[in-house]
Length: 311
Image 1: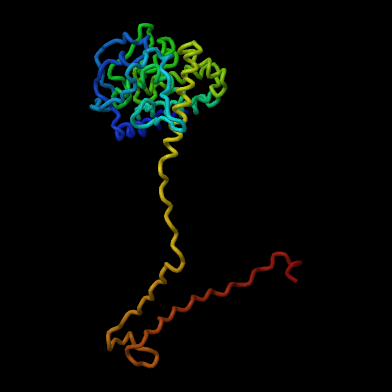
Image 2: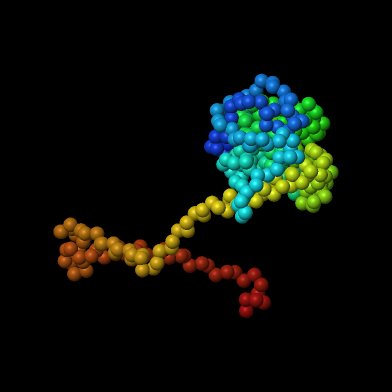
């Protein structure tokens, strides 16, 4: 069973409401790790139900931030504070890209529940691979306005190796097209790649092997885990900070008024139908007499078929 048909509509509607679709912007190469610094500058393609609309993409890279993903650490926060995952800030995720991570998590919960794919691990990898699809520079269906192909041949916002994309290509937004440059498709394909061969990402060793598919260095694994924990905690704090809807108070019994009596209909003077039992007009009319119940005919006696039982 696939979630894609069910997820596509809410994802697209949410994307439109959040106004996260972006227009053509500077090349993704300036916001991706060093291996993708020479990204192709192919013309943008309009893919989807509607063309991209102008929007201000989120800037994730702070001045002086290194291009090497191993050195891009989560932002420091004051004691007891957690960077926000929503809105603006160094730990923020564009809403449309956030929906792609969550949609992949939901799909993998159906396709490979034993894998235990968490959305925040995908977010950590997506942040270090492409700064979350170049800060959300996509069209309304999540396709990058400037395609990315690294010198190593890695593709799209998750920098998937070409062989991995060909093996696990996916249509994550149910638009009928599997595109490595689409954040929904690429994220779902990356999830399938990481969950292949019985991987279990809830276990530290399984998570380490999955992350090593992208980069085998221990420093990269440690950084991915830091970003993943930051996103998980940031989303938890942000969602719990939302004010719950106030409960509707129940009225007390004394506040409920008794229903007013319904007045009897008034009859016009002299109306013979309004005469009471004394014959005086103006009284309450007697209830009409019910017709007599029909009398059932008397049934003939039942003939005796077994004489021994009839005596």
